Amino acid sequence: MPSDRDSCLLDSIVTMTSLADGQPTWDDYIASFKQHFPTITRSDEARRRSRVLVSLGLVDIENGHMSLTLTGRHLLENPNAGFLYDVFTSRIAGAQEIQDFALSLTRAQLRAKLRTEPPAGLSPTQAGLVEKWLHHLKPSIPIKPSPHAQ
Picture 1 (tube, rainbow, N blue to C red):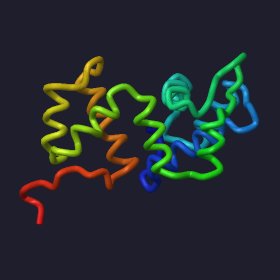
Picture 2 (picture 1 turned 135 degrees about the horizontal axis):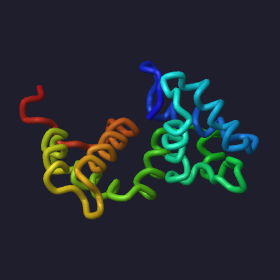
Picture 3 (picture 1 turned 30 degrees about the vertical axis):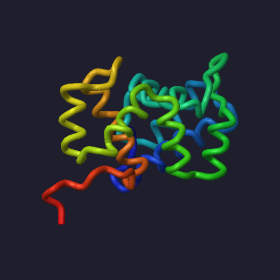
């Protein structure tokens, strides 16, 4: 996800979603996106990264314009990691299954399992990315503590 090092995933998604308010053209949205996330310099990369909003159901792209969905409006009115977490687990392939694995495994065990046995339809790389999102959106998910943790 695009962000500056000081912002969290929720802040980045809220910023990205807010740029779609007012139904900007796709090109205007990408220009604003690149201004807000200066580490993203290429338009094709900005387009690819902003499509996550469509996957999450926060925006639609219709007739060359970005438009907020009801879910996107709700997120902007009440930026909440728990809400975004619920959206993520309901819309992203493998997210719920990975969350279920996390209930009985340490994070290291979970990551090892995802490298060798990712959920159906996901590559190990994709499963790892989904796990990172889950971890960053809701770091308090009940992951079994490491036996080496104090």
